[in-house]
Length: 86
Ligand SMILES: [Zn+2]
Image 1 (cartoon, rainbow, N blue to C red):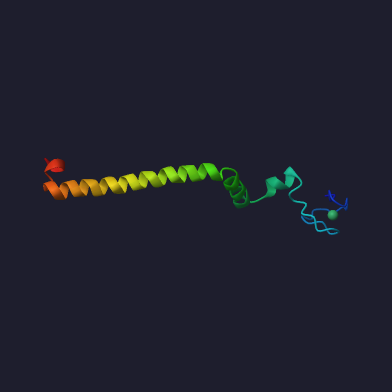
Image 2: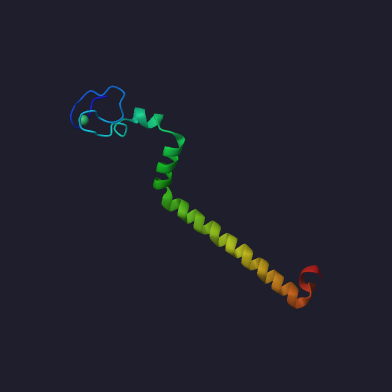
């Protein structure tokens, strides 16, 4: 691969031997060689805001479930279970 900064031929190197430029970021061919983890990290960065929205919704749902459990538990305690069990 030819370094885009200093035009030095570096073969299959990922870093330029002349100037230290990171070559693997330059081509889509090498992007395909990246590990699933690296792609997952990048995807997380891209969709990070969406993930946070989903995580917040999940958190609200969990809080609602826990709160409703305690509300039901409180109603059962106060009524002796008559509301739930008849
Ligand atoms: Zn270079």
